[in-house]
Structure formats: structure tokens, C-alpha cells
Length: 112
Length: 113
Image 1 (cartoon, one colour):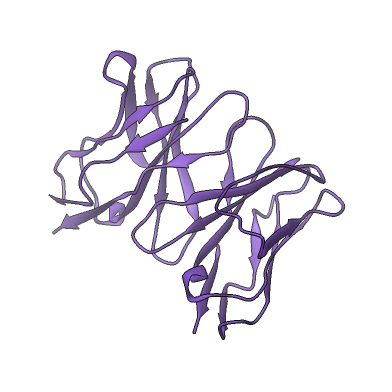
Image 2: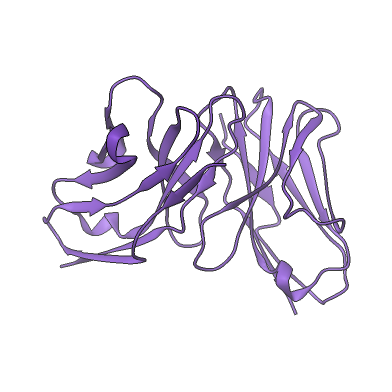
């Protein structure tokens, strides 16, 4: 069990550029979650997958955001046409059941 | 809808003193409740969880929390603070069907020598 990993750990981009983040969950965890955490706030739910199926998306996930988990293993989160308001820490978590989400270290995005 | 309230944003205690971090929740269904800790520039680590078994839950690093349904509370305590406990602490709630977490705003714990 190597834990949840995320790549990159840090990303600086210019407004209007597209960015993609990757999350590798704990092996055989069937649930994968994405959260966004802004400075001074708790994480906010964005979306989650059970295997390859995306089962729920938050209203926070605008049309510029898309997430995939093509083979039920790793997941990607893409933000198109980034805005300064997208600057945040993007956290991924995985779960092997209904409880115990294990979090990755996060990807910190800064949009200039 | 579920929600979590963590009053105050910062708590400061002396090393060796009692730690008490408050959490109140709102849920229309029996909740699962969690406390997570976050160290700077790191992800969240689960401290403890309540899943409708014992109301007094013991976690890692000497922390414990008590579920009080009548008060809709799940306060986190530790009898004696250590310098290494300085971090940000988040309380979270989920329902029993869809386990997405709803977090509070977090509390920063400082420990004075």
C-alpha cells in the first residue's frame, strides 16, 4: 500500500491555459474523489467515481472542469481556460468502501 | 443537506494542556463523523471516525472524540498537547449512502512551549 499519489504537486499557469492533474489511488480502491481547498477553507467536494463511472458532480464543477477515470484506476482532472479563481489545492482521495477516505498530498494550482 | 460548523479559526494551548476543538454538525440522516488533521503543504490524515458504534471514539496520537446526538456535536479532545500537534484540524460529515465528505472550515491549533 503506497498511498494515494498526485501529480504534479505544484502547477503555475497563466490565465486561459489548460491544466491536467493526475491521481493514482490506493490499488483496488473502487471509489475515487476530487476535492478543492482554497486558502483558509475546508476541502469542498467536486466529484467522485465508483470504478470508471462518475456518479456525482458538485455544482462547483463548472463546464470548464472535466474528470475521467477511464479504466477504474487512475483519474485525471482537467481545467480548461483557467481563471484566477481556480487557484487552490486540488485533493484526491480514494476509498475501499463506504468510509475511510485516504487523501493524497494534493496539487497546488496557481493561476497568474 | 449536511453541514459542519467549527467555531473559531484558531486555538492556542500550552504544551501539556488539554486540547478541545469543537465541531457541530447538521444532518437529516444518521451521520458518519470524522476528524482529519492537515500539516502544512500536505494532504489530510484521518485522526478518528464515528460510524454509529461506540459514541466515544479513540483515534491516533492520543486524540478522542465523543458523539453526542442530543447536542449534534463531535468535539475532539486530547488530554495533553504536544508541540507536534500544531496543525489544522477539520471535522467532516458524510451520509451512509453516498460517502462524499462535507468539511468544516477548519481550526488551526497552535501549541506554546
